[in-house]
Image 1 (tube, rainbow, N blue to C red):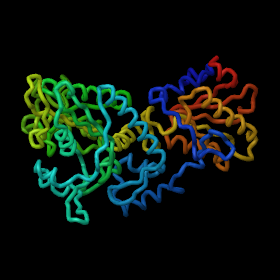
Image 2 (tube, helix red, strand yellow):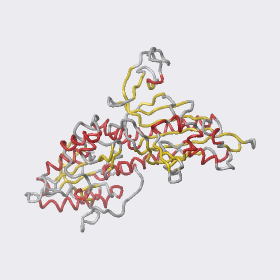
Image 3 (cartoon, rainbow, N blue to C red):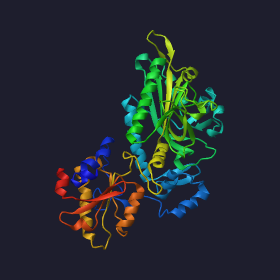
Length: 469
């Protein structure tokens, strides 16, 4: 990026990340200047006012220990705000990042044939009682009764609901399968001790996919297909991950894998063989025998944050709800199922945990709330005349590169020094920052630009920027 900027070809490089996302282009901005057209102004972005270090620490007494980096940073820079134990307001920067993550997830799921649905959060008790999970899940289920005394839970997962939906379709043919149905919705789990901010809360966003196949062999192919899509997702995000063998837990089934981000704050203990591809959650191993079952070499232990989980369910749920299809011989057969989860809000927090410094948020480039922040001179300074020039630059960037519409933020808090705004920009983790400093009034104008807090000087004759020359 730096080399491109020095050759005055910043715009195509800056657009790279946005181009990988969908073609969505916002047409109106509610936090633009009254006569500023399409300029996005930082002063109009809603954030908790003056949330300083001492205020963050004061929240600790009310909402629990701030024991991980991502929770502390997300509070400090105004990405989240506590609502109640285990529940957080997701503020504009976080919502923008989450919407980008969901778009990338949609791309990966739909590339393998996924179809998006949306199921009710309220799940009737009788569905869960049919699978015995009403009792098995215990206090983790958030339960309630309506005015008629009917029992429900706030769904932490939707195996029962989706299987009942498929079972209600009475004339399914093997020719229609497989079905890969998924949703991205709020989930609820009554955690006994919510902690680590968005890493372990009571309310969270999750992508959950449920698949229905005509045979065990086809179901295994679908399982591998979804696992490959998960690998593609984490590779696109630039997150180092490990796929490990896992316990099926209360979901059930005969095979399970977790996708883990190795990090010290993780709550899962992982065993990884440095000599072969074997890796597993320690809860699946005999701890008295810590040699790799594949190559008999020694296993190394590390900690991780679970960000994805896959299950091969077989007919565990389809047999209970009689989810059938007509096979090639014209006979009824039970659908072979799988289920696949991604913790959407957990991926955001885990990425910040893994990538950030102690003081500054760092995002996967695809998920940064804004791709660039432009910092004009301080009001009343000798360079104030360059303010209009950097405003024009902001307009030219979004006109020349349509993918950057809605991605370039102008820090119009000109009552602050450039240094103070640069510190804020570094904390927020914008991938690119452009500063109008002392040399902005030269002919041609010189600006400073930076990527991940590394800055250099470059000249921008606007006609060259627009032509890419």
